[in-house]
Length: 82
Image (tube, rainbow, N blue to C red; front, top):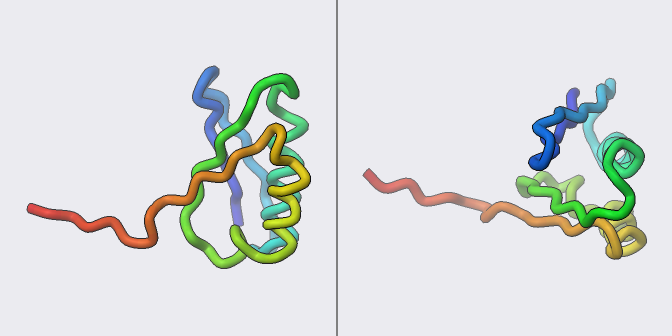
C-alpha cells in the first residue's frame, strides 16, 4: 500500500509505504507529512471516504493536529453527466 500526497506549493511528492492499509498506517503517513512539510504552514489534506480516514483514532489525530491540519473529504459520489 502506498499513501501519498503532493505538496501543491513545491510539487514535491511525499509517500509512505506500508504492508497494510488501515488507520494505523494512515496515521503513520500523516505523521510523515507533519515531519516533511513546513511546521508554520497550514496543510489541507484532500481525502476520499475510506473508512479508516474517519475512524475514531484518526478523528482523534485530526483533533490533536487541528492547528495545522485540515481534512477535506471529497463527496461520497460524484455525479458525472454527459
